[in-house]
Length: 164
Image (cartoon, rainbow, N blue to C red; front, side, top):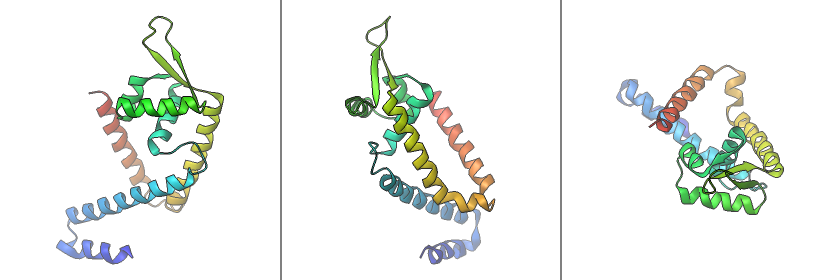
């Protein structure tokens, strides 16, 4: 289905570097879109409804406890979006919100036992999803170095964005 489209792109303009990059961008965009659909399907039986919720719970898991502002900054989300997720997760006993002893305006968010279990289940599901999508490439050592380079580029972009 996609082979003809890619061949057309690659044959157009004599396989120039720009054309190959355009094909890669198109392919990667389509992989991302389909991966999001698979994500939604894989997480249908959990209390996680979006990739942003998955990212938020993983952030709390890694940091152990965070503030509202930290969550917004790390995930590049609006305060209202994070507030709504906190409210929903608090109602479902996935997170707990505690006030700072020195400054009652500051609230710390951490995972409950149920939240830790949910993150573990979600990460297992995500690893399975990634294995389904990328497993053959990694097993055959195809594209492995390229994926590592992409990860480094993304990490650098994220770190640059967080240090602004």
